[in-house]
Length: 112
Length: 112
Image (tube, rainbow over all chains, first blue to last red; front, side, top):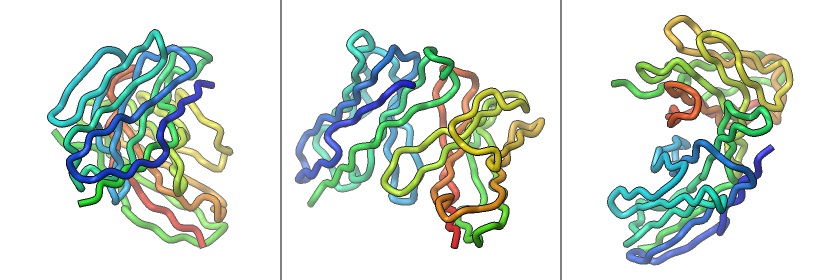
């Protein structure tokens, strides 16, 4: 099945700093989503971005489908940005066209 | 528009028992999928239901089973609970394949 690798696994920032999270995937995808998991476990939708670039406030994302990677940018980080960020993909290849495959996540800690 | 809701939020069961978790899908969504998230890991796909039929299954044993009802709500049943079944169980709904998935807040199951 498709492999999803996220980097870095852990990231510690001072409030106000910028960061880039990366998601590499091993096959062509028709769906890619970025999530932020809050301390209570809920996955909060950040971006639905199988290709192209989107921005939402301090967050933006870019997916380059032909090169099989996606980037999540966080600017002017705040302590409330802390948590785990997941990339999840869906592919039509190999009979797996019905599920999201998640990476292991990036644990972001923003210190005041 | 109501989001995805799950019940209960927390549950403690004894090894060997059976458990039923419930999920109400987002309004207008006919596809529901279930994921298991062990501590420190990304969510793993269990199965998916589309219009009351299971149409995809991950690498989970048959003691994990489910149902989807005419109103598209869903249940996850786990028989003969094992200690390793302790995890966060997440439900996601979507309007159709290859569209954005939205997750509920999860049910945290502890097996003792």
